[in-house]
Length: 276
Image (cartoon, rainbow, N blue to C red; front, side, top):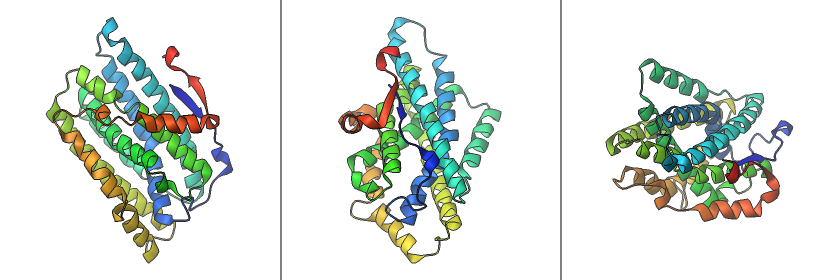
């Protein structure tokens, strides 16, 4: 299902929109900065790999989920582009998009095959799905957030949850092997960690709070506190390494359904499942 989020980012939002806390705000902002370029590459990788699917009726369902995946990611790309426009007005500089573009172009120059591009997409989709699960399962992570941005991040988490297995299922259907999957996942983890750190630090620098003790006390609490992000994600992230791993071994669709039912007035349906 493809939805349109009913928020108006043109009105802007506070500089420290997440409970007045600079580090948490700039970490989420850094993630947003990666999405327009990254999600376009995910769309391109899935489409390129889907061309290798047999045209028989056995793959009709997978093709339908691919259509929804593309529609949802395109919507995410658009709305995070608007989000990032506001961050630019606030004086932040998006380096992550340039890093991503350069890496994607290098891969094309080196002739990375479609199945490997798909493995990278499946890897990043797992990272995103784990963060999405935490966002929905632990709503306190967004305590004090500007209501519009809290809605945006939870809507995004819902849709990442819904399509978290699409790239993985396509990879497996096309005969992708475990070791290639794991190898590209290690690359994705390294890439995500270094770029998220680099962009967050850059955001804090431009925000003029990089060297304030409170910034790093908040960072320590956010990642390593009693319910810190590190403790909540480390197990699920490394579960991807298992031989028999599949994204729906952790079935959290009820979290997505609960949010959608409670927030039906905050989005409209662009394309329903029967039109997929």
